[in-house]
Image 1 (cartoon, rainbow, N blue to C red):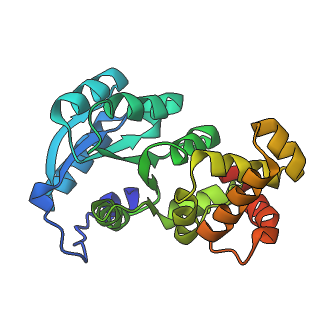
Image 2 (cartoon, one colour):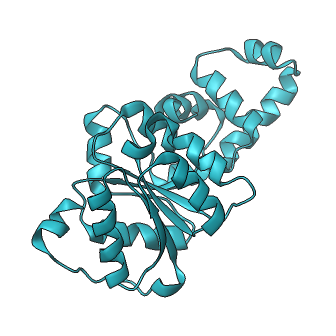
Length: 232
């Protein structure tokens, strides 16, 4: 987002969102950066309901103000990012979190992708990417900025296409477990014995998994599982 600040630009979102009704809480480690981002968002008509530069205050304020969106900088939360989301979402499922990072930590980012974060931004992204992220959140989707995707690729982390991510959401926890075991190379008998189910029940599970993933047959489960193994 630094590029926009340095150029003193005020980009206009290319979509129609009721900005005044979209409540945002900003949590960033540096007070100056936090203040600047809040002011930029307010200038664009967004409803900034609060800000914080410390972890404990962030959690407390989110619980009280229950914003629709929280821009959470990884540097303020670090390895506790996932804990912040879990604590804030206790009895409050409306708040959606955007992870913003300037000093990336691979474990933190992967944990965030596997938990309750909906948007992912890198410090090199401009404000327009943040606005696009807001739009995705409003429609119930996830958003990965080009800068974040490039960062993850450089770190050797493959991102799932939205279509594949949606397919995986169709699977139950048991079905995901079976797909993970299939991708690990376990035989049908080994999987059935481990899960204490009959081979016929396992076969039914595999058929259902293949159908939910839009695969031609169960024969493709192993290859599919291996291709997305890190996301199971």
